[in-house]
Amino acid sequence: MTDENVEKQMQDVDMAPKSPDSKEEVNSAPQLPDEKTLTREDVLMAEIAALNDKYLRLAADFDNFRKRSVKESSERAERAVENLALEILEVVDNIERALNSDEASLRDGVEQIHKILTKILTNHSISPIDSLKEQFDPNLHEAIAYVPSETEKEGTVIDEVIRGYCMKDKVIRCAKVAVSKGKKEE
Image (cartoon, rainbow, N blue to C red; front, side, top):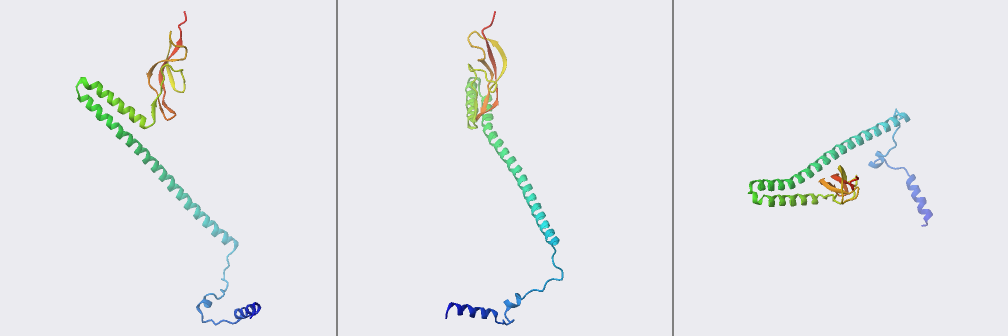
């Protein structure tokens, strides 16, 4: 048989009347149109309802995300404070030991406490600002005195009253300093 003959026979089989006793054919019988047909307005209203539902679900999901983010942020901050508190408690313990010791070893105890605190600050990327003999910088220093100096030129920091600190590259506390006026004029 040729391809044309095979095609013709297949068309004849498709055109042949089919028996209604197969389940497939009963279920796939053409449906009669409903008495009420959907109008364009009904279709659009259904689409609006679906979009509104989707919007409400999205809004609820976003609200849940926002609440979860706030909670996680709060928990993260609490853990950070807790970790810092644990490190500081070591210092508190050492201060208590120093207070209970005799006066001869008190200085050694305070020096040890200072080393521990310096280590804690270093672990948190907090470092002191070197100010003495440096040029006054308003980004790093807060001038609390402006005094004449025979040895230092004008604008040089000659005394550090309170040390300043940086955390990474950010100044977290400016150094309070005395700045040279230069030589006293007569």
